[in-house]
Image (tube, rainbow, N blue to C red; front, side, top):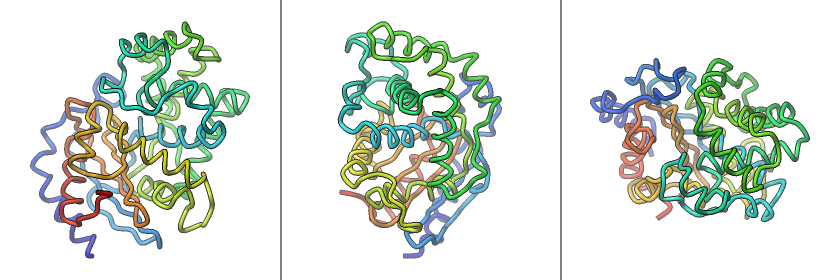
Length: 307
């Protein structure tokens, strides 16, 4: 299949819609991002890469980082993790306080904000300190991306900390239900730090290969997580990876994936490739408007879907 021609064609087809989305201006450091940018990258199991658009441009991965923290926590805690956080779709906005209170401080899944903050708390427990947790999360991401230049943007992290009142509220609510062990401010700071990591579509498509290959990187042959746990991460990505639009994404795209309000979306085609698209303009659900469109076109044109 001529993947390069396909993604070039997709880039042309989605270009007229780049003005339609809205950047995540509730995070001041992201408000100035040019919404009329687009990139798409594919990394195959043999290392072959295909790129279209601004594939070398770094952007804030935001909630895509939740895939990586969930991987680490599930690896270390196994089923015990689900005492802290569930794996069911929320059906509510990613920062909802209402559902969290109704369910007594236990987040529905690891991909909504409360769930990812809780997972971060578990990693702080495991590593013994906030600083070590931040370092190990970054180390893991650098490893799966095979790129030691990956780093967090301190100005974005500071901006999120300054204006992240709702995330602080989510953490405090979990703390009130005894479902957060460490100091709220310390945990949220680590959370914002990994959300503020900057990568490009090239790096991110590469970083998804371990999940496309049952937990084993097909290029380096390094095992990052067991096959059964990789299966569960992919399942949660499919059912919960796009907040309250996860059903829509599964219906239209049909691949496990995870979005971030920085405009990125990662996806996997099992036993074949990792994919990343980026277009900063978001739809009303907080997912990349054009990125979602591009992935729908990709699965339609290639027939590559898990269904």
